Amino acid sequence: MWIDTHCHLDAREFDADRRQVADAAEAAGVRGIVVPAVAVWNFEAVRTLAHEDARCVYALGIHPLCSAGTGQADIDALRREVAASMGDPRFVGIGEIGLDFFVAGLDSHHQAWLYAEQLKIAREFDLPVLLHVRKSQDQVGAQLRKLGVKRGIAHAFNGSHEQARRFVEQGLKLGFGGNLTFSRARQIRRLATDMPLEALVLETDAPDIAPAWLADDQFGEQHKVRNTPAEVAGVARVLGELRGIDAAALAQATWRNAVEALPRLAAFAGTMAPAGHTTSTTS
Image 1 (cartoon, one colour):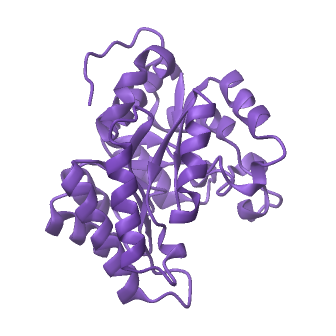
Image 2 (image 1 turned 180 degrees about the horizontal axis):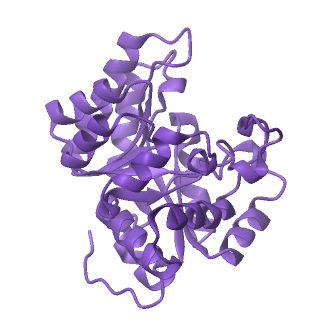
Image 3 (image 1 turned 90 degrees about the vertical axis):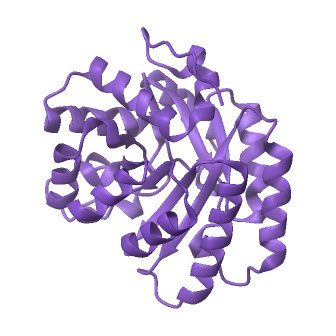
């Protein structure tokens, strides 16, 4: 019924029980999991995971938090890997890429170079992007427009209504996960309620950004608790309550939105899509 459009299932937090975590997600109705890479060193890990577990697909990219020490050799390696993966049906896009202006000590100019070079690869191969946009919505969006990348997901979106509108007008979807479940996250909840339903996809960012019911105190110290892809079902429940939409309709809509954002997902309609959904689109 559901698809987690952003989950780091390859992370070491899942080394002891990765298969059981995926099984629990499936039991909760999560039929698909998108696993983005974060650096050249884990490209093979996300690819292998996607080929060993039919519920998973993968993306390749270099995360801004892994930008230190990267250079042209990493961009060249990414381009080679993307070119080699174009015939792989489990490969769905470029990610996780973007900009992070929240974490201290990162070189913003180097981040910007790395992000732009990865957008160029996405444009060259006509692939969607999975975007990290922490405290960087305007800068991430400006480069999308400059380089003409018009498909993908702005993951864990937490910007203004105007910033959200510009991403959607550019052709991107907005990812909502655990943060949405906190009553104090008023801006995120307003966005999830007010933006067109066609603009929204569901995610967890597991093992990070755990939902309210997993937080270990009233202030929502969610990063201290392991999140899992099964929690997409709970995120969907909250989103449905906020928007006044039933689970079946929301599942249909968010599946359709995920395929619009990541068209190569359409190849898995028979195994991932909600019951009753049909599509003839492939990419």
